[in-house]
Image 1 (cartoon, rainbow, N blue to C red):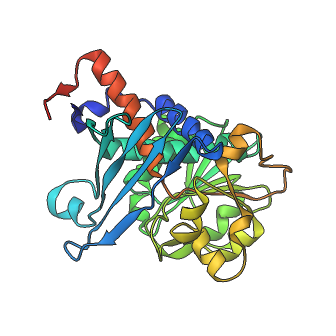
Image 2 (cartoon, helix red, strand yellow; image 1 turned 45 degrees about the vertical axis):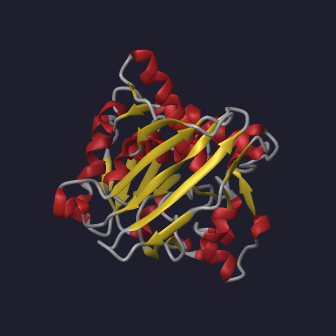
Length: 321
C-alpha cells in the first residue's frame, strides 16, 4: 500500500490537475460509468464535530475507495488546525486490497474549488466580468483562485457575515491583479457569477439579490438543514448539480423540493452539460445555479491522480499491509 502524507500534496496537485480530474469524473457520472455510494454523515456528539464517509466506484477509471473525515469547528481556535479534516483510502477494484492512503485536507479544498470552477466554465456567460463571493473562510480563497482562471473577470465583490475576514479573499484578488470591493448582500446584483461558500443553516443570498443572467455556485451545503440561498432562487434558476440524489437530500435543492418550488426532475447533472447531452445555458438572461454537494468520486479522482504523481516522483511511502 502507498501512503501519500498531507505534507506532500501541495507539491503534487495543481489546480489544473484537480480541474481535469473533477471534470472527467462528472462526465463519467452522467454517462453511467461512475457512481457514488450513499453518504454517511453524522454529528458524533463530541467537539461539535460532523463525521462521515463518501465513497464510490469509477468503472471507467477503475478507481474504488472512500474519503473519511468531516468538520471539527473548534480546531482552528483550540489547536491551530483547519476545521475540515479528511483522509482518502483507495482500493484495488480487482482484488479489494487497499492500495493507497492519501492526506485529504488540501485535496478536498482543491477538488471543491475545481467543482465550482468547472460549473463556471460550462454555465457562466462568456462575457462575465464581475464575480461575487459570499464567504471568506479557508475554502473561499481556493474557490476564488480557481474561478478567476475561467473568465476575464475585471472585479471581485465580497460579503461575509464576519466582515473582518474579507481580507482573506481581497488578498487573492490583489494577487490576481483584480480590484476588490466589500459590498452589502443587496449589492450582489452587480455580479455575473456568485460563489457561496459558507457553513450556514439559514440563507444569506436571496432571490432578489441576483440579476438575470447570473451563474451561482452554491458550494457549502452538504448536510441536512444547511442552507446558503433562498429556496425561491432555485425556482428562478436552471439548477445543475454533481449528483441529483445528494442535491435533493443534503444540498441546496433539499429546501426548494421540500417547499414544493421545484421537483427532483428539475435538477440536472453538470456532467450532462460536459458530455453535450444537456444544453446548459441557453440564453444570456437565464439564471443558472450549480448545487455543489461534494461527491466521493471527486475525492477519489484527485487522490488517484496524486498517488500516480507521488509514485513517479518517489515521494510515496510504500508499506506492507
